[in-house]
Structures are given as C-alpha cells and as structure tokens.
Image (tube, rainbow, N blue to C red; front, side, top):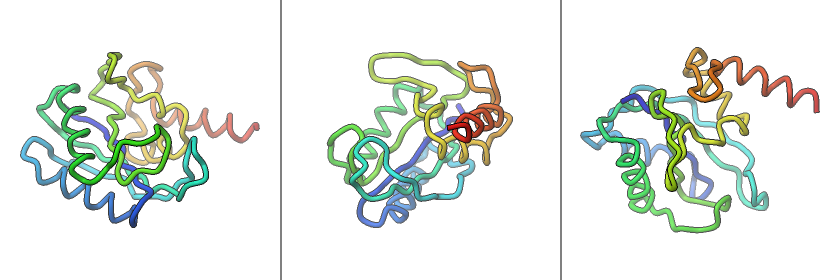
Amino acid sequence: MKVWLSLGSNLEQPFQQLERALKYLNEKCYISVLQKSEAIATKPYGVTDQPDFANQIIQIETPLSASELMIFLKEAETFLGRVPGQLLGPRLIDLDILFYGDEVIKTRGLTVPHHAILQREYLLRLLNSLIPDYVHPETKETISVIYNKFQSKEGAK
C-alpha cells in the first residue's frame, strides 16, 4: 500500500530529528520510502509559546495494514525518544499517517485521511509539491484544488 506520512519535530535540532526518523523508517524491511518533500520550518499550532517545527512529508510503500502501521509509528516515536505529552505541545518526533492509499478509516485510534490536511497550509503546500493530482478520498477534490481553495480563503481574511 502507498501511504503518505507527516514527520515533525521541534526539539533538539528538529531537522536532524527528521533525518533520524527517515533513516529509522528506511531501515525497516516492511517500509520502502518512495519520495520525500523538502523539510520546512513552520510555526507551532495550539501551544504557540514553543519552538518552530521542522516538517516533512514522505511517501512510503508498506504491506502493513493501517492499524499495524499506526502501532509501528507509535513504537518508532518511542524508540526515537518521544515522551508522551500535551496534544499540541513540543515533541522530539511526531509521525502521522496522512493518507493510506485512497482509504477512509474512522476508528477510535485512527482517522485517515488525517484531519489536519484540510486545516494546515504547510501540509497542503508540501502535498501539492508531491502529489498535486491525488484525489482526497473524502472531498473528492485534487490536492491542488484543495490547496488553491485554502490559499484563496486565507487571502480573503
């Protein structure tokens, strides 16, 4: 299955933490990294009195189911040093499933597509650079259309 993940960090040299996480994922026999976006700095959401984040999106291929992948990502975060904390607070590494193929999954522990895709400009910008023609499984619009609508809405504010 082709999957798009978001990597984020805002502690202890965040851009190096992204590289560390990418290396860790790449070493797993059941994860193949297919492509990656540039890594960019972004302002934090929620708790804003914290350092800026480094963010990146990668596309992987994996035989893991969405729930197996989610369990693996949480274990990877722990291995890479993430300590459970406040929801939108600082973190050493944050790994999220943005898209799992074209599936829509809504369970207690997993929501895919990730809700933040439609709310955060940087995610849409990075996704637009990688997969502008990908059709969002819920909105049925391409990433480029969603991104342009978001840009128009933000410009109107």
